[in-house]
Structures are given as C-alpha cells and as structure tokens.
Image (cartoon, rainbow, N blue to C red; front, side, top):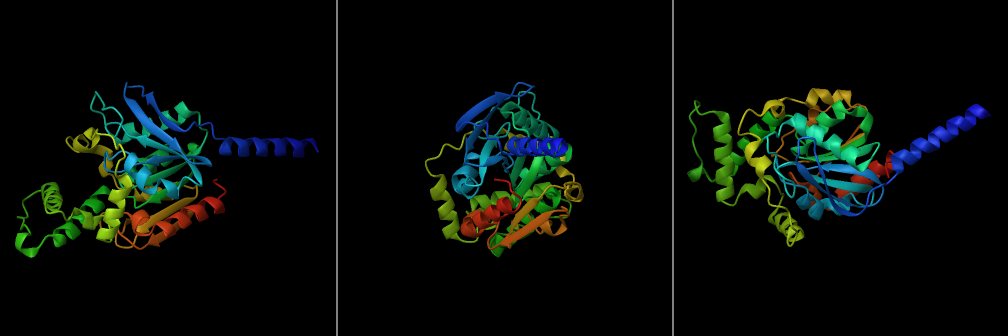
Amino acid sequence: MLRRLVLLVSALAAFATAHAVPLADGVGTFTTDDGVVLHYDIAGTGAPAVFVHGGPGSGSAGFQAVAGDLFERDFRMVYLDQRGSGHSASAGNGDYSLERQVADLEALRRHLKIERWTVVAYSFGGLIAQSYAVKHPERVRAMIMGNVLLDLGMSMQSSYTHGLALIPEAARPSFDDAIPFPQRYFTVLGMLQKMGLSWQLQYASEASKRAAEAKVAGHDLGRNRDMGTKVFSGHPGSYFNDLIPSTAQVTVPVLVIDGQDDHAVGPQAERFAYPTMTRVTLPGRHNPFIDAPDAYRDAVHAFAKRHRLR
C-alpha cells in the first residue's frame, strides 16, 4: 500500500511539473552569460513550448502574427527572438554559432524555470531545435518540426534549382562551372527578390502571399537582422553539418509538417528517422500554415492530444 502511494505521489508530481505554467503573458527579456539581451513573448494556454524561428535571423513576431493561433490553444508558446534577430540585441562578440544558439535556448528555459517543454521549429530553426534536442534530451517533451531543414546544403541546392527555373528564360543567368556555388545561390535569390518572384518559393498562390502580408500588417517585427547578415559572413561551422542522421537519436514524439511543394527545403523529411514520428504533408509550399491553415491547426491539435502535451 505504501509503495503504491509513493508511486501515485511521484506520478502526480511529474504530471504537475510537466503541465505547470509558471509563465506570465507578454514580453520579457533576459541576459545571456556573454552579455546579450534576448527578447521573448509569451501567449497561449497549455503546457510550455518554445518557438525556434528561421531566417536565419527573421525573429519570431512574424510567425506569431501569422500562425500563433494554430498553436496557442494547445500550448503556452514562448516566442524567442534569437540573438541578432527581431527585438533581441546583437552579439557584441559576433558569436552566432549553432552551439551558441543552443546555449541561448537552454538559458531561456532556466530563466523561465521550465522543467521540460515542447520544441516548435520552423525552417532554418530546425537546425537549432534538432541540435538542442540531441544535447538536452531530458528537457524536451516533444517536437513539432514545421518545414524544417536539417541539411542546409540540400536546402540551398533545392532553392537554387527551383529558383533559377522561376526566372524568365530571357533573363536567366548562365553560370560558369568555376563560379562557387554560394555565389550562384545568392545571385539567383537576389534576382528573384528584385524581380518580385521570391514569394513563389514560399507560397502556393498570390492569395496566400496577400493573406500573410495582411496578418503581419501593423505588427512590430523588430528591426535587428544582424544574425541574418553575419551568420554566413565567416565560416558557417556546424550549420552546414547534415543533422538528418541524428534524428534517430531523438526518442520523444515528433510531429513533422511539410508542404507537398516545398522547394525552399526540398524533400528532406523523407530521410528523417525519428523513432516516434508523425509526418503530415499538407498542400502548399514553405508556409502551409498559410496555404492550408485549418489542416495545419488540426495536425497540431491531434498531435498534442494524442501525446497528452496540453
């Protein structure tokens, strides 16, 4: 009888710890051990989850405005602006390494006194989220990986190939094989931007593009883009490691959401080997939460309910 009581008390304590919500609504900041002030915003109900934005360096406010409501009925969302991004400060020492971003995530968890949380990642944020889950498995309850890239080289090749095809043939550049691939890649992306065509790698239609623009209109997205401009200015280090093989090490439940025509990332999810993985492929490109929001919300809700994450 005593043993049963002890086990019951332990189980209730574990449940309370996992579902505790010691988080106040609204914005906050904290300072990392190397002196960088990071900004976060908290919204939603349920157990805590941290959002790891992409870009690199896009900040979280845009995703929160566009897709926050798809998560916030199931999770208490913590939207972090990574160093050099959005409303957060730049790194005075220039450290935007993958390892430093992982350390910042863990520092935020300790700052908020969260025992374990669900890690939600989008796009480039997948590299950070995956690295965090491997380094701190005891702190991760589950993962939601939306249109993530875990192999940056594969993503760049896919974006380049499909981006080049979007440029009208008469204006399409012809590259000498001697030109380094990064130079060709950034040339194509720059041309798409100037020609107003880059949205076609992101959205399935102009209607989706307009819907996203309407949702972010009037929101303060933050002005810092230091990470985005500097992360590749030197040697990108671990960002170029292929992290897909490490998916086999992550044993918590993982929801993978991808767009059926997401050429910005390419077919990376076909190689993911998470032992407990639910994969949902939705109509759309790199932003199915805009192209197919109802189906996206249903996938998140079903996953949270199935694994009792709420």
